[in-house]
Image 1 (cartoon, rainbow, N blue to C red):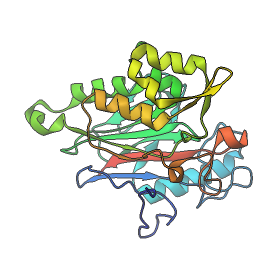
Image 2: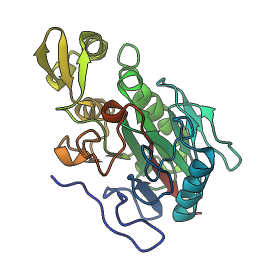
Image 3: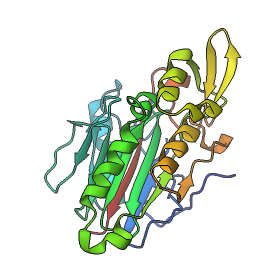
Image 4: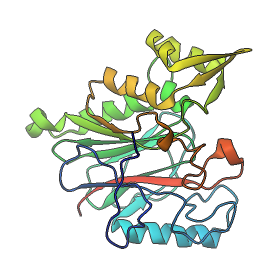
Amino acid sequence: MAVSHKSADPPWHPDWLIPQWSAPAGVHAVCTTRAGGVSAAPYASLNLGDHVGDRAADVAANRAIFAQALGAKPVFLNQLHGTRVLQLGAQTPHACEADASLTLHPGVACTIMVADCLPVLLATRCGTLVGAAHAGWRSLSGQGGWGILEQLHKLFRALAPVQQAQTATEIVAWMGPCIGPTAFQVGAEVRTAFLAGNPRSARCFTAQGQGKWLADLAGLARQRLLALGITQIDGNDGSAAWCTVTQTSRFFSHRRDGVSGRLAVSVWRDG
């Protein structure tokens, strides 16, 4: 299956991914690619991470390009591979420590950065609440089956307006590009962490010998979302077009390059 994206009118860069998902009108989302920025190699060109060694002035210029394209305020997190979720308001600053965010405020974009980890976007069908999660394997596995997606979902349910309960608690999801199932080699400790929460996670691991496994990160996230009752899941299907490691010219990949820029994935409501 090809990556779902479409070209949009300026100021969107035609190579960026515009999610094709079941979010309602008034909810917008975008996933950047390497294209459209000012950074030099190895960060060429739209690196949005300010913690990877790129020139601060170039990162600032790239973030300005990104914010102008959104027409909303992207709030960048200091991601720690944990399970903290931050509720964003109009004045929330950058660099708060969390691995997911959600907001009821229009014009505020929940934004995460990735370069192999899986970005997951959520929205209520009524369009009042949106969120984004940084789902690397540590955040996704969590402890005892409770990770970043479970924590984000819990807060979604708590914040969904009571008067719209029939539709507000119906949540749709989109999964973006990440390291693919043929590229993500892990040790036994990663498999053990997932199986501790759900023995059925075993189907997402392929033995490679000598204690190594290939892990299907998007497949593991899909299992978690389905277990939460989220059945409308669009985007990453595990095919090669979504793999950050193998799509060299399109996506940043820390696993592939060591020194790498960061993609940004945002979701927001009309302001």
